[in-house]
Image 1 (cartoon, rainbow, N blue to C red):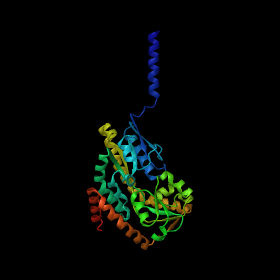
Image 2: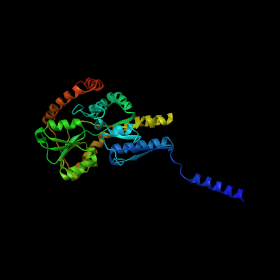
Image 3: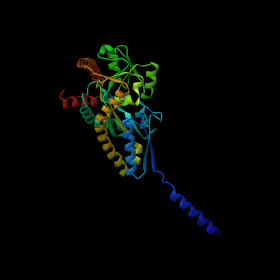
Image 4: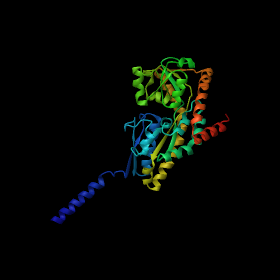
Length: 330
């Protein structure tokens, strides 16, 4: 009887395990500061799904949106380095305070087109890889934002119109442009932008059409001036210790899928920019035509910012800068 009972229990246990779904061998939380509808969030979700498929669920990357893990900006290099999250989407210009070489990505008016942004990214990539390694992480892919503009309550048609504006900026370079135009820059995480606009802490924002839609700017702002001041980029990095724990096949899946996602994201962004601006216009935001004289004024302000940056830039950063200008013949 005892033998029969033991056999029955063993059979029951086997059948129970057989019908339960197999748990992933490795599960990682992926940090994203943006809402699920943002193109960087969508890119991360597609990347995670591809990895899950390729590894038959043995590596399950669970995307946490909107800064749900509590990490949203300038601290993210440290967060990934310390393994607090194994993988994260990081706004490159936002972590320039920790690694100054990243400041080159948002030097105002250095880039004049999306193709130039891609060229700068390609030139900078090996230098950025070296920096990431120093921070104990690996870059899986780099992806762009649409070019940045100025979102305001009043029309801005000259540098003089920017005087006195309280403008949210996303990095030091943008803050210096605002200060040079006699405005007041506010360094705020994106999660605080809408509330700050609604309460009057700020009255303007420098950002892209994509984040304008994420932030429902039509509820708190009226005008959009397309300045093409920068084409900012994000990078998705993985903690090296976590990466090195994976088998070689899975590591290669991450590398190859990162390359595929990078190509997809760069192709996607130009059309995305147009689509997002149309959404804002349909909701009530007016796109203001920006004159060449206004752009020339901003360019003159930026010349001084470039010169100050060059005085403090590392040898690697200067190599990127000079190589880029040589390639675009400026």
